[in-house]
Every structure is written in C-alpha cells, then in structure tokens.
Length: 139
Image (cartoon, rainbow, N blue to C red; front, top):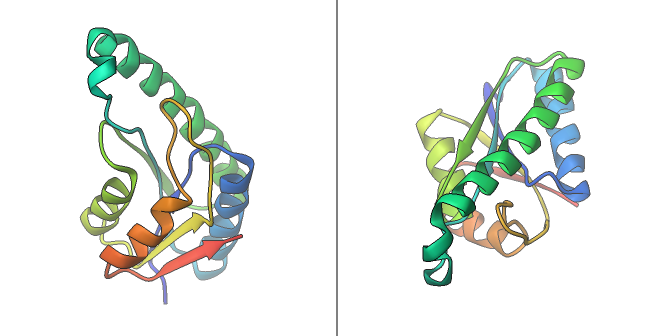
C-alpha cells in the first residue's frame, strides 16, 4: 500500500491532528515518513529585512519540525524532516513529495497564516489540483 508518506505541517493545532493521524497510518502500514514544513518567500516589503526574515523562518521551521520529530519517535515510525524555504507552500509540498517518491500526502484541511509558517487551508485545493499523488485531508 503506502511506502512513503509525506506529512505537511505548520505546527498549528489542526496540523498536529494531521501529523498524529499520518503517524498512526504510517505505523500501521510500516511506511517511511517525510515531515515537511514550507516557509513562504519574503515580499518586496521585506527586502530590507531579508536576512532577519530568513533567520526567523528557519528558527520557526526548526521548532515545528523538532516537535513533529519527537512525535514520530514516540509513534515508532521511520522519518526524516525537510524545511522548504522561500517557496509557495503547495509547490514546496508537491516538489518534496515527488522528489522523495511519496505515494501519499497527508495534510490538515486548513492551518494558520503567519510569518514563517506553512500556509495550509487555501493550499489544500492547490495541492489537490496539481499533484498526481493521492492526498489525505484531515479535518
């Protein structure tokens, strides 16, 4: 069935539910997991603060991925973490899923929208429209 599962997270409570669900599924089917968070590109207004923005985004992504990695260890799944910086979230999720040969993407139905965070919600429909990989949406 599923051998490689990508789980997208922005660290929000809703995304945590998708992370937990994805880990349970991965454990049951003995699949490997790639945990991914995507930080959006900085805007023209952020040009003057580019280095500061990138540093904040990297710190935020590390915290999100570290928390998910701890859950993965508890769930007993084989995992890796990936931070995709400076990219549109749906594009980053799809690119990593293809690069890693994932045959399932797990993501929350929507998430939060803040600096350095993964943008879900509106991204779900975009992932669904552009990926060839099956998507499991967790409410």
